[in-house]
Length: 195
Image 1 (tube, rainbow, N blue to C red):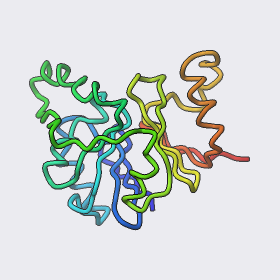
Image 2 (image 1 turned 30 degrees about the vertical axis):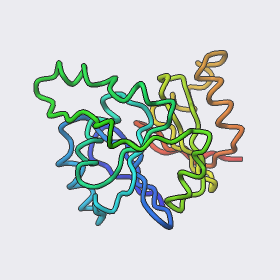
Image 3 (image 1 turned 180 degrees about the vertical axis):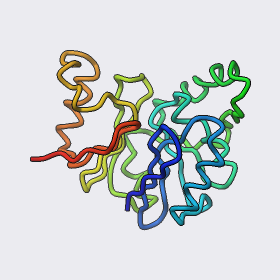
Image 4 (image 1 turned 90 degrees about the horizontal axis):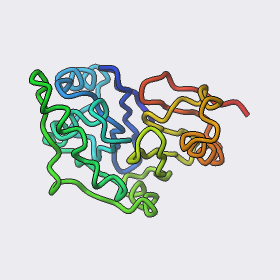
């Protein structure tokens, strides 16, 4: 089951498997209260989240990850993201209004992206995680075997013509070869694919 948790400018998704729940992306620092309220309105509990997976470590996608993790869930990151975990720390340090908690490296569960299917299976989720550079070098996307594709800030498919011959175009060609049926974006509304 997929559930969008609406509380800010970044789309956040709960993906429920048969053995656990994955939170895909979080919002900007300072949005924890709004996140908790949105979870309550959706009749979901933060403590029921098993893992937090961040599509890429820009401020608007990882801003409250550690605060959520402090409530029980575990931040998980692909091996290709390891050097990017703190890439937004300096941005938050300059924002005196942002109440930001940096990620605690020692608590992060890393997985080899080539073994992502086994990692997701721990939650009873059938799918795989792919490196999807273009928006950022640490971007990853999650593709469920049922056809749902979560792409974070990868430029929307409707802009594909603008990105032919670029890294974004190459990444989209690889993702489209997986035959997704629905795409969940980081900031745009979800889109059904026809055919």
